[in-house]
Amino acid sequence: MWFLFPGPESFAMSSLGYLWLFRALDMSDEIDIERVYSETKTTRIMRDKIKLIGISFTFDIDFLEIFKFLEHNNYAFKASERKESDPLIFAGGPVITSNPEPYKKIFDFMIIGDGETTNIEVTKICKKLQDKQKKEILKELAKIDGVYVPSENQQSVKKVTNKLSECIYTPIISDKAFFPDTFILEVERGCANRCGFCIASYINLPIRFVEYEKIIETINLGLKHTNKIALLGAQITAHPKFKEVCKYVENLIDNGKQIDMSVSSLRVDSFVPEIVNVLVKAGQKNLTLAIEAGSERLRKVINKNLTEEQIFKAIEVAINCGLSGMKFYGMLGLPTETQADIEEIVNLSKRIKAKYKGFSISFGFSTFVPKANTPFQWFGREDEKFLNEKANYLKKELHKLGIQINISSPKWDYYQALLSRGDEDLTDYLIMVYKLGGKSGAFKKAAKELEINTDYYALENYSYDKKFAWDFIEMKPGKEFLIQESKRLIAQ
Image (cartoon, rainbow, N blue to C red; front, side, top):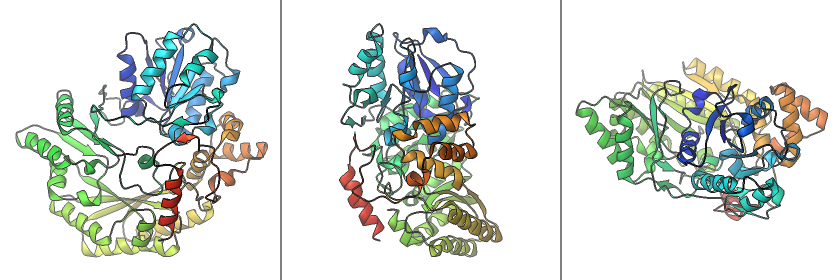
């Protein structure tokens, strides 16, 4: 079996999910598995020995690297065009769980939800039935919860949600990794905040926590091999014993252990001295706070109930704990956003600069991408022209204040939205985009040649009674809840 990460090896070596799923399969005596990446040219296992290829699909644009890999190894892009002697090819990950439909003609089957147990079940069946016809194997796979087999015309597929019975960690520590020599461990999964746009929150509900004792045990395991550890989770500081975890690490540092510890990001209510102090002791120079929007009104619309008073309090804690700066993360083009909301980002920055002289702040912005299976899946993006105007206004005004700002490309975010709300009609389009070189011009040219209205997927607002291509996925809290939540948020 080959297990593909559709990106460079350095990214794969810092991808906790990819490495952990590889570890689980690699521990089986019945599977000879090899990690492969988008730049892999030669492999340990010969192509004609491969019976199964698994693919970790994390970002929408990864399809370009997946096609590159298939082409390099002489596999047809569409499952129906591959030979009976070719391996079964499957994918899983956030992109697939959220909306697998643009890829239903590409993969033989897909994993919906958490993959830890499903991947094991799938490979066991494939091993047991390896001498049977593909259609017989796929018929059996379709009986497993969380396995979507497009050729079987399933009426519904249940998303699998695993309990966090163990602490997932980096099984390979590498100096080649994007985060070199870093031991990453998962403290919790999911987020109870449920921001209206956030796919990471909704596809990982309910929020689950790893037991405190298992976290400590895993930290100790990592520290035997490196002094760099990273705690991962969408809402990491919501862990009921997060302060105790920090205290444990602080005691180790106070007793002479050199530890570099980082966290993905902090919630505003976790900017308390006992947490921030430990992170500073453990080498953190800057911390990131996701404020999402400049005005309190817009923060309420997205379910980010964060006041300016809380932001100021977080800055004060950061300063008192010895930090010299903070990064804020925000989003442009959110539903109901006005110019006044954009101006409020600048006004907030002015107030911070006036009150906390010498304290450095910077901003990172992406533009709103409607994601399937979230309350904001009904809302299209703003036109690129307006987003660029907002971006240029912010760059100009924040530059005057001496504030560094990074904004993602509205053009590429547009194509991300297209894929996020896409359906099976996009398959030939995606293939043509790849064959035309995969740059932004290729997306435009392919749409023109195939007469695909990409604005329909990316920009259009949909009615609440619209039937989505991905509605067959059984996912809690369910579509009716998403509709009610969407209406509640947008009314604010």
